Length: 160
Length: 149
Image (cartoon, rainbow over all chains, first blue to last red; front, top):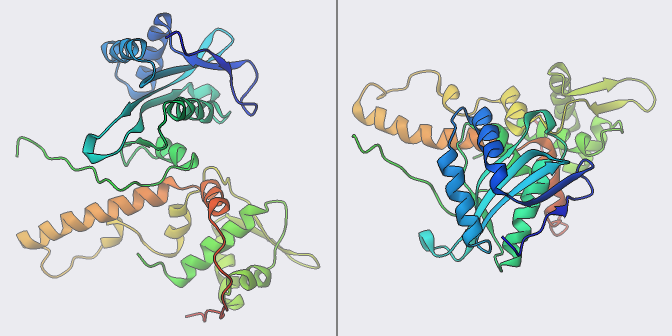
């Protein structure tokens, strides 16, 4: 991803934290961190997102936060256009921060970094979707200023 | 959705106190800003005190102070002290509940209540204060003190 460089994180972040594009070597750490938080290891999924970000870094964003050499968090997003009738907007699929290093603005730094990439690509709105019972992550996105949007998620059990 | 008067008093009080956590404020001071009944607000503050969300000190310069964690306390935590919200509030059975129509109606109402609970529990006091700061002040309009029920 040649156009994306690691940059020092926002001043409010703890020292020695940088946020930049994911590298192939990071995928094992991303998979482990996600598995520890969600309970499910999805190496193929993360690899697919990595390949997509490498192929089209303008619309597929996969960033990691590092403190010195240690990967301490990541965020994944994508710019989508005209799905559900919506004008182009940024979507955040996933965000995770090491549990022992939370409440230090790492998540906020990752969120701001992905929003910055979206803005650079000409997008002015960001969306995400979260399970209702995931109160922690829901509260995190709320704290970033996100509010309910104009869409309603519907689903149906196909075995009915 | 309409909140009960006591609940609105509590939310305004918590937001006001949490916006200046190092300062003690009197019930009258908060009541004046939001055009609330001072007597009703005083009762609400005592309830919040018993819940460990505010602490009171007496004497000259006394008043109330926020003593919760603004990044952890959410709107549902406060509202639930004063009124039930969501499926748990349904509690008692109602006429028609035993019919298929009643069950179908309950499914729809549960969907709304689940959404309400998720929204209220995801907005912390800290997030609410950020939202307040981003919200433009409304045009000044004459205020009238609300009467306590």
